[in-house]
Length: 130
Image 1 (cartoon, rainbow, N blue to C red):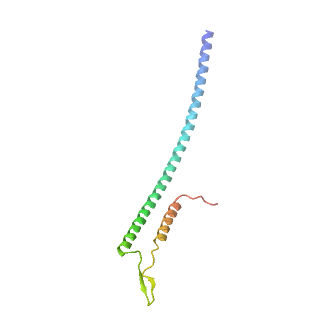
Image 2 (image 1 turned 90 degrees about the vertical axis):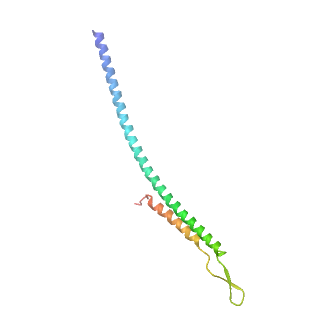
Image 3 (image 1 turned 60 degrees about the horizontal axis):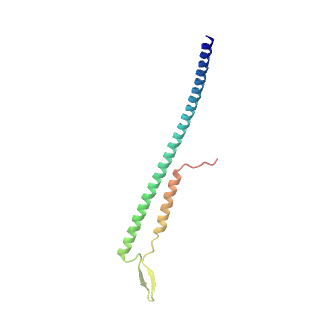
């Protein structure tokens, strides 16, 4: 009889040990679940930031397409007129004067691109000085 009681006590001790181990496993699972929720929240934040970057890239691409179309139109207009600007004689001596000024399209398009990049950068979150 004492052998049976000792065996039952050993079984009960094993059950307590298994229960303690299961409690530790459950606590670890809660910690892993909390960590995974944090990771998922970070992934959502990264996804939102990437969507903002992609939207800015689409805006820049559209602006560049407009720039290219304007440049093609300017080149075609220059070819139709024979040159981008023509010269004529003025006065009795052979001095030259331009009919129209040279186009300053390069500066205009450069400012346009810089403005678009600045607009995209201003939409991004900034660090605040305190």
